[in-house]
Image (cartoon, rainbow, N blue to C red; front, side, top):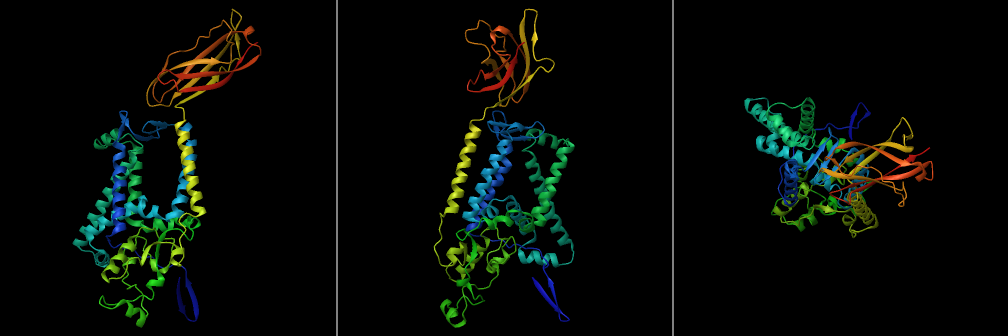
Length: 468
């Protein structure tokens, strides 16, 4: 908050002007961990659409066909209730990780952070170090400046287009997507979505950057509700660091503390220069902090040069900063962990017990029943059977609870129905029964649909039989 005093009136400006954040490139322990994780995630993101399983794309979320394939599992719109389970697992996992390690997701694996730092890396290679980039932006336009800016944005746009195309390959078969791209034969829908996600990536990672994390991401807003005094977060040890001030490397640390009251912070400002969010961690805990650890690497590097102990900025907790013991396994954290594990087990059991078969029974709407010339009662049904597996299978159809075992009647039912993978097939069935075989005018029974190749795939559907 900025205060301007003019003509004895107090003018309050609640919003300060926001300048661009020029991120200084930093090496160190946590930066190495993040880069390794980021490379692994990006390579997995790029390579996954090309992985084949059973001679088809292993991961394909085909919206047009409403078929969502993940290796040997195929999900259909009827399975969307599973999303509720997935969201519950994700929610409790988020609560658990955030309570334990703060915004570590944001700092190490969030796509926004990964792509932003990748774009900054390109910017650094073309325009130079942080100070050179700032000077270049302030300088008047020249051929050199125009060349560097054009090259940078061209590479950014190429990265955005490549990212968007890779993302769309999760929704359009990769062979079809790239073959039609080479022949400039993309459909209007594919072209629209590729350009949409390309421009979104370019805007988010190239221009908006920290504004997405600070202003648009809801996680930064509600994370404080999950924090407690034992949560690990990046924090500055003010007790050790204050009062901050410059000094020579040859100055004795203890003498500076006793005579000048200086703490270990040399006020080099590197922790601010390397921060992707542009904050000063020395001002205390802030919701903008994404726990990336860049300021830790920068500070440790400075402490090493001055021969001071590392850890002035570190992953710590409020309890530890206050000189108390951090309770790593408090009731809140353990509860979130147990609930997360419980929902993961339940979701796994739910998916494992899922039957890759769906059926609906539609009765003849013109008549409840018919009596043929032999006096036999007929009921007509249409079975809609969906083979939700990834291979064609043969099915048999039987009934139970309709005629007694002692009955001499036999029902003519389909015994070898071939249904292709992902195909819904309509099968008309007419049941003809002597009315004297049935004790009630309305008899409930089950259609039993069973796969021949995999007998454990069995589905029962209840319906009724009417007689006169």
